[in-house]
Length: 144
View (tube, rainbow, N blue to C red):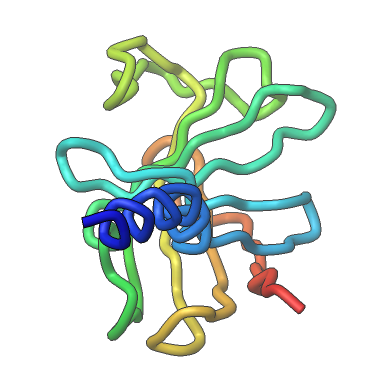
């Protein structure tokens, strides 16, 4: 009994570390993009830097959540707070997590280079419902 209790106590500090190893981080020309969490609705939530701001933009990618193999092409949307420098759309959409209306948003397409983790990707971004007009390349940040 003493040994099983000791083993359980020794395993406790490792649990947060194991969870932290599951997050993904990519280096891009605009800064670090982070696979931050997943929503209750099953969307992967990525955060990205906004030039000249302490705030981060957010991307919601439904089919990427929980996907660590067979990655290919995924579609989603991005939102930024007003005044981020990106053009505002003619109408607002609702932030899926906070319920806050946002007028700075658009569509994204995320294309993974390799099907497994870690993998580089190319992200295409458009404003509002416009065609994709920008792209970003992400390279995984790995330990070592």
